[in-house]
Length: 203
Image 1: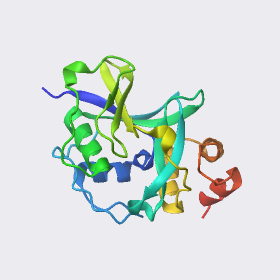
Image 2: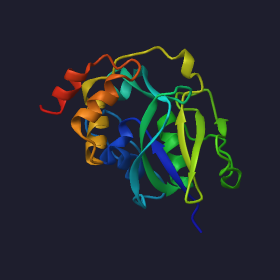
Image 3: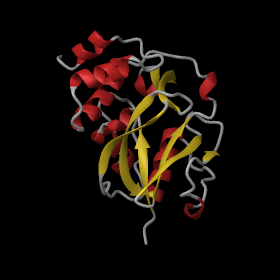
């Protein structure tokens, strides 16, 4: 019997093609890193967009994205974040977290310990070493991850190819261009205004 979760992503994995590199392996378009993929190569059972409280912070210096900033989720805000939820197995989710942190092992909670809304687990002092349980849908836990030191991260403007992955994912879910531009332009550290983001969708 498979244990399912909803993986709630808010960064470049909003793009289905990008997300599938974590499942099947490969080099995402616009990136220079080759992902191994998950042990279970199955596609997600479903995916959809849902809002949750918080804000996105573009920070860090990612070698995968030409040293530009990448997304981190800060749940301690009264704003709203657009997530794309993928229904996958818990084992697949754990493989994604390991790849994001470029490590072979983390001490994940047992599946039976999940389904306890608002749980937080600090797995390690790594870029995405904090696991958050933000909801329960159809009796499946909704999980995401972020930095355990979200308040200490230094803001850094993302490179255009990275931002285009977010845009691609949001467009594919039926969001209008003006909605996407308004949403992204107010996130912390983005340093692109509404018109600049809107223009990216016309190139």
